[in-house]
Image 1: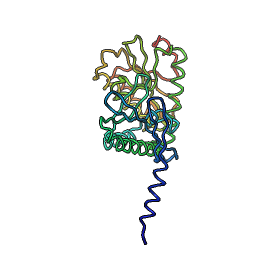
Image 2 (image 1 turned 90 degrees about the horizontal axis):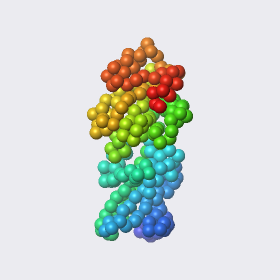
Image 3 (image 1 turned 180 degrees about the horizontal axis):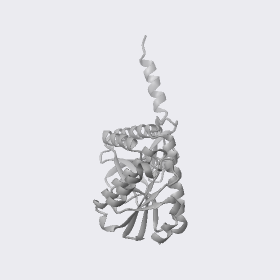
Image 4 (image 1 turned 90 degrees about the vertical axis):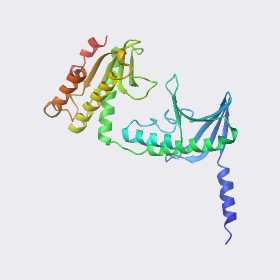
Length: 273
């Protein structure tokens, strides 16, 4: 049986799936590759000087394909780095906070392969992002406390002085804190939230805060740090002074972090004003 005609039919139908939209000086290329949420991948082609630039349009981390963008869970971050290295993907954060993944080439002949690499990268990363790496109960507990703490801080701090879930140095996306309070544009108070649905998760939250504070003191931003605060979720299921109180003491002693219990959160109004 001659199967070649079947191949030609597959090729014809596959090629028909490629679409495009003209967006000013940028061309959106809609690729025939779908995520596990059944959304087709788009990449954006434009020319800057003598180079052709192919980007994700900040859609991957911007919540266009899913509700929340990419996860910052350690397991997923490792996967993301693997795919970035595999496809030689570059990353850039714009002044408005949007994260772009992109490839460049000065040779038009290479555009097709770059489009293939970036679209494959996007498809893989978004599909893996649908996997839950973290315990669901723990994830919900952390999210719930972060929301309560964020809302409380925003209730008495002006929006120009508080940034939540933010990197200490936007140019080096390494140290992310639950909140950053800007005493002045160049003086920063680091804030970490400590919570957990079990004693182990609660202790791990303390260890994470300890590491972040220590690394911040070793970073290029050290001269801008004026204080460190740890807001402790005293109503969390994992909270127990008997089991993790000594870890909190270590955090306070070795990082000079001030411990603020959630049931005494009104103290923050004095400290951050």
